[in-house]
Image 1 (cartoon, helix red, strand yellow):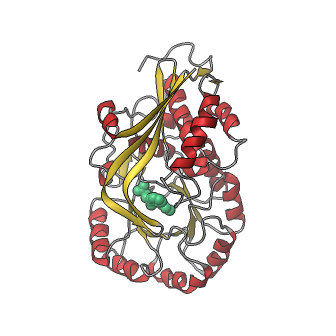
Image 2: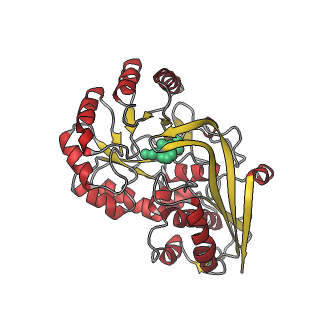
Length: 379
Ligand code: OSB
Ligand code: MG
């Protein structure tokens, strides 16, 4: 990377080119949640180029729209035909200038986020500052927990114990109908003091209220996204019937959604994922709205590889990220990651990568072997 130039602060960045790849990494173990099982992590990687610098963004859309209503297929077309042709060749003063170009389009949060994240990285590098600094974060390590996929009761207990032993600050268990109370009871018995949470990934309805009332006995920190992905109202009804705080993930797509959820007491904790809300700027607004209500947030994950993971870590340095996030060690998911730097948590603390921008670099040789397509944009 070049040294800080005196013109970088004064002149807007012109995007000279972009590279859009599709990357596939095998997972160390299959990851099962209420909506299905993931064996490989397939994701788009975006490289934006300006002034001899490169900015990196990683998309979190799954091949099929099973987490939210966005898929890899649909977003690739939207990025290739609509977003990138308007961005490559254009100049942007600040990430908010880029955002102006993205907001007119409905939806496509993950596609917008990937581009916006790559620009933040590029822009921070042009100022020779870490991403956390331009976002306004101060921490040099962040607290992290783990998210444990659905397996047998015995294996879940054993994995929960092993991660508690490693010092992770919170254990999150994935649940779904038929795989809930018994598992939670077993893990709570094995770990009476641990911070435990559950994530239902939208798999229940209000008819299941008695199950959630029964969960009040296990002193969970919160119950993540029990009801429908596009619902806020029913979560308010459920929250009025139980003591354990509800945490929303899927149903919060913006700071405005968060305000509605907080005003109606539909959530008492919020999970922020940059991809789900369309970028770092909206993630910051959401973070601030929750802060104003004295409601803690934490940074969720989507089994990201190193680029997405680094973005999550920098974002998590903001002050109201007051609960452990999901950005655990990369080696839990991948034998080999696409970045050169190891992103490893020790005693539940993940260090923030140092250096300009996101602070991690691509292992180009390895990346080449796991890339299935590359599209080049120039102007
Ligand atoms: O709901 O938080 C979720 C993974 C894929 C899709 C949805 C979710 C998750 C996780 C994994 O919980 C978190 C991680 O990246 O470790
Ligand atoms: Mg979740």
